[in-house]
Length: 281
Image 1 (cartoon, rainbow, N blue to C red):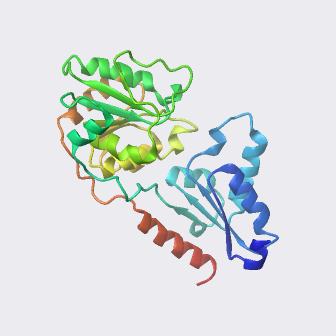
Image 2: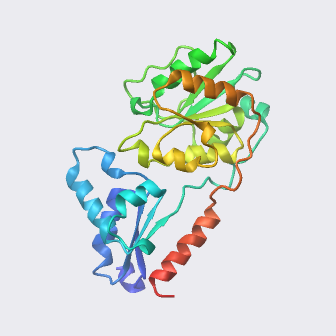
Image 3: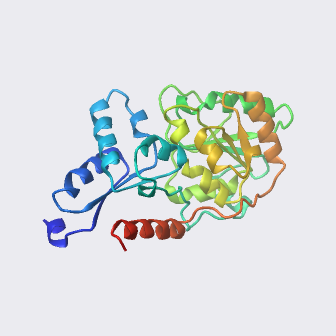
């Protein structure tokens, strides 16, 4: 009823599927334009839920404005759409907290060793993330750097056995993530190409870069776009030797200046302009 009284110009379904489907259901009867947002390929989630995925694709196709996290999603979802109605809004780190910080102080807060080289992985500790390659790569890297430690944080899924000597932090709250990145020497971002990995634009990669940390990432269509100005930080998935070599190179760095990164303010300006264009303003 409130929407009817307000007569909105736009109704947005903002990630993920159910919200887009609901927004599409409401926009027509209320005479509003439809905005749908996607930051992943949701059709890769729960593959058997095809009726939901079909409803999601219909909502995305109907949208007057479709915003996506990167160009591979634009290609996947934007086929047949007028180019001006699909907008890439890259993931952007929270402006509060994600910045370079004191490494020793961050390690003290997380109770991490102060004098060991640390490589971190944060995120879903899931078999699909190619973590076996990371675990093996750390073993290989230790031949040259015996003090190296692996730090893991995130939601641990069944079927993942952690290395016995990994430093497991469990699931950290959002406001502790800047501390994790500030505490470690290198951040590894792992994934595999395919229906999920090629369309996933990991916010943790942007967050680590905002903290000035050296990053090493599995090469997928999405990470290759994020790191298009830093291709030396990409590693072929499933290659422990190549990953170990990349980790050892990154350990020689202290901080990295990545140049301008996406920001909330910049994204808000682009989105506002697109919404106004959709209203003919």
